[in-house]
Length: 213
Image 1 (cartoon, rainbow, N blue to C red):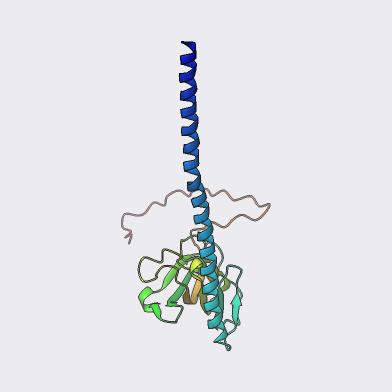
Image 2 (cartoon, helix red, strand yellow):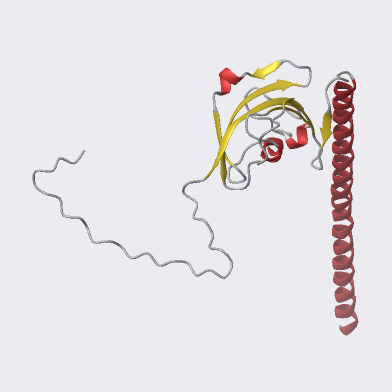
């Protein structure tokens, strides 16, 4: 009887062991497939970026009269109109007023200035195209700059869900008309200076015959 019980227990243990081992083996290809997919995705993105940069470099080479500047973010720009008097550039929290024209990499207009109208942007506080977010901070008032943006700092894989498609590099021409500090922002006190306490004034009594607009 004891021998029979031991045999049954051994059989059950063997079945459970084989089942667990098969389950583990079945899960391994999923992990391997996931790693393979990620590697292929990274390689594909690297190839996409390299191809777009090659196209942009050909545009630069075919325009020898224009001086292009490479940026750390991986895009290029050239001045159409460069200011010789202005020295300041927009900073975080400033309000920038500009005009914008967007073309595809072949120079075909996607959005004209008339389509987009005057643009208002709170620097580094609004969600706009990554390239423009960075590029505007290179500009000075009354300058016009043409930017060459690879797709990864334009609208990327998703496009803009309107006229700009998937992984589309762009040519953007920006005219910075003006920029001013945000009037709603409170200036920080100077180092070592105690902020002044503002005592509210008593309300002014208006005469009965006064007409308030």
